[in-house]
Length: 125
Image (spheres, rainbow, N blue to C red):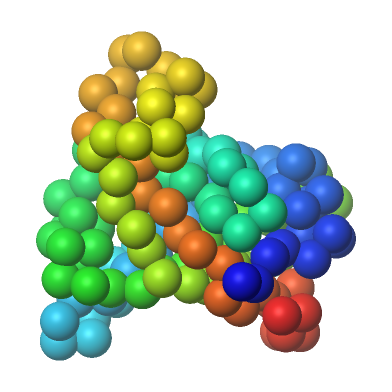
């Protein structure tokens, strides 16, 4: 099981602004969205709340892997790539419901399982 390097785990806690979640459709066309309702569930799982997914949900259901891109307060960029799991119940879903603002629907917890990690162009994992 791949986990976030310590540097990236600390950078996640020091991120600024929304993250960018990218997926691809069956034809390979990319789709990227901004997301603010995000959390680190564990050292191998980052979670994005599905509050208003449309094309992103279609891509996930079709089996897309994904990437999360974020930037730190010091303007360092990190990208985490991996497979996506979609949870509408269970521990990941219940955890998401705790931190996702009540004003959003929180349809599901979208979990990106860490497989590769980059700091800019440098591959860390």
